[in-house]
Length: 401
Ligand SMILES: Cc1cc2nc3c(=O)[nH]c(=O)nc-3n(C[C@H](O)[C@H](O)[C@H](O)COP(=O)(O)OP(=O)(O)OC[C@H]3O[C@@H](n4cnc5c(N)ncnc54)[C@H](O)[C@@H]3O)c2cc1C
Image (cartoon, rainbow, N blue to C red):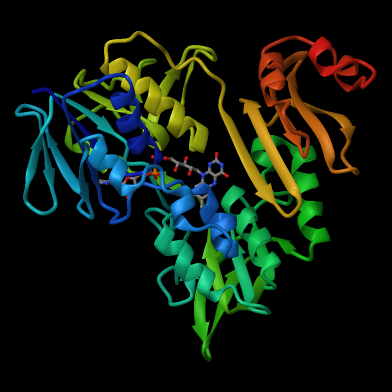
């Protein structure tokens, strides 16, 4: 009987399994995850779960009985440590091995603590990262009313946690290496909007590069190029690093991720990669992309299942993501460059608006902020050439642009 093995236990891994069964794959199917939990979605970890609202069952991809019903063998709480390509086997940390005919790598990312030069003090008690449900539980326990929280980093996870912790009554300082959060990716205009949103809610966003964390007289102290300040809790939110070690043991071509083609096959035709680790060729944008988003994990998992079943499909969609911070709910579609001009449709002050990024007149990306059910229309506009004054003209319906 044919055997497909999935190494990794997040959203992408679980979706490959369900999509394969939905497409009628009847062979053996094994999912190996170093986490002990059933595969779950991570977005609630910085939002509803961290706030104390969402129950893990609500973001578990499939419940336990689902895996039994669909005959998916789960190897939870054990890491895959290497791939023997000659014998087509995955070796596990417990000394066992699983044979594969086809292997899907879905090992995702881990929170960075600074790579080769870890942030001094990253391992002190009270210093957290946020990637797993266990991380979220231990952080949540310390986000109490009045706690002084230092968030190091002003990317999406840092800003989302700042918002959630503020809503739990904590006092927040964000150490942002840039003057305006996320401006390097989305440009100044959107970055300013986000900065003001946080300031309005009482978050102290400092332009400062954190240099280390120390323990002084029973509390923590964040050292930065703009001076040092006291904290009860520190979140290191300085980015994620793809888990590429397993792919490397198979000698696969690796760049910023596992290099795969538009159908997600790696340099070894028996091995595919999906989700956060995949550096895949996007046929729509005609370039390689590595995307760390929820939607990408699902869509690439479905594409990988199609490829495994011999169906010709390709990575041809635009990146999409969402975020929730205070009263901001936003969806983004496309792939802008930070140099693209941005155009606002509606009023930023009202908190309900659309944003378009343009390279000349070509729309490279668009976002809807607190306006819903328009993201598909925006997706259709990306790639088209439309003059900025038409985009901002609200007398013209969006669908008629
Ligand atoms: C706190 C947080 C909030 C987020 N919020 C958003 C959001 O609002 N919007 C959005 O679009 N995206 C968001 N994301 C990103 C999104 O969650 C990721 O893009 C998505 O989880 C990627 O899925 P994945 O399955 O590729 O990888 P992961 O979810 O990282 O799963 C990989 C799994 O593989 C396991 N693994 C790794 N190595 C091995 C090994 N050798 N053997 C066995 N198992 C292994 C890992 O332990 C993990 O369980 C958020 C991420 C985090 C951490």
